[in-house]
Amino acid sequence: MITGLAWGLSALASPPLPSYREELANVRWREVDAILTAGCAFDRFQGGVVCGEGVTDHAIERADAFQRALFHDAGLEYLAGLASKYAGDEREAARRYEAALALDPELVEAWYDLGEIRLAQGRYDDARTAFERVDQLGTDGKVPWLGPWRLAEVAAHQGDADAFEAHLERALAAGFSFRQIEGLPNWKAFYADPAIGPSLRKMLTVYGTPDVERSLAP
Image (cartoon, rainbow, N blue to C red; front, side, top):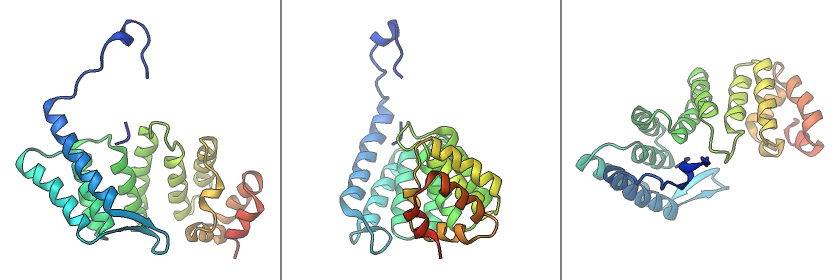
């Protein structure tokens, strides 16, 4: 899970122990996460994550068995959604992410993955809402440009060049590199788009490299 140091007397205090309820959920979360980690891997030839036979069903069953017997947990709902996504069932994945967010509205992973599904579905307003939450919540410094980058993509799909530039400038300031989008089909479409292309070409001139631009040009 995406998760400071206070100085003074408080720095001497031990962190609070997780509740028994939280620890029960954490133990099962680690088990389900290990199932997916061991049984799934990114396949560049298929352009996504591919899992072994029965892996996603097993992960979902372990998450749901806990929730049926004990209580619903945001982290387990999220992992069930992730397994559903890996299995190719985006409708079920979105339902699970929404269930996770109903339990924990600050679960940034669920907002991000839900935003990806809504973006792919062309539900741009919903995608923007999800990625705005990612931007607001942050990623604990792991990939600080994720929210602005995906917001730039939403703006591009909606033909809003001003918002596209503003979000992309924030992403660049947070460490985004145009290498991240080198040759990507959706960015090739942005490059060719009459509304977005001029803004993208201008920013590539300042922040990009010739080989990245060549990878996007028709």
